[in-house]
Image 1 (cartoon, rainbow, N blue to C red):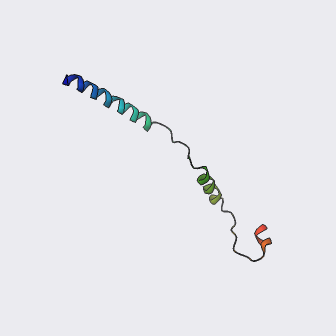
Image 2 (tube, rainbow, N blue to C red):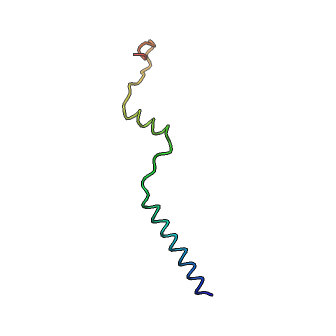
Image 3 (cartoon, rainbow, N blue to C red):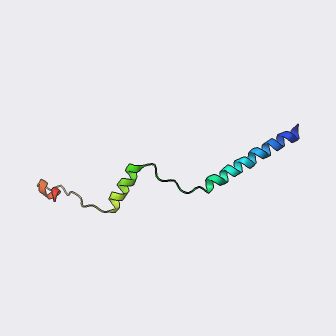
Length: 61
């Protein structure tokens, strides 16, 4: 009976190793934070910033 228990444990460990290997070989997943990705893209483009001018047309330009 102990031998059968060892075989079962060995099989579970073999399956666990196979799943672990499959997960390690998966390509990187896309980010799940689209708002964060958009923020990064905007920040990388270095947009002009509002400097607090009193004239609102400065901001529009």
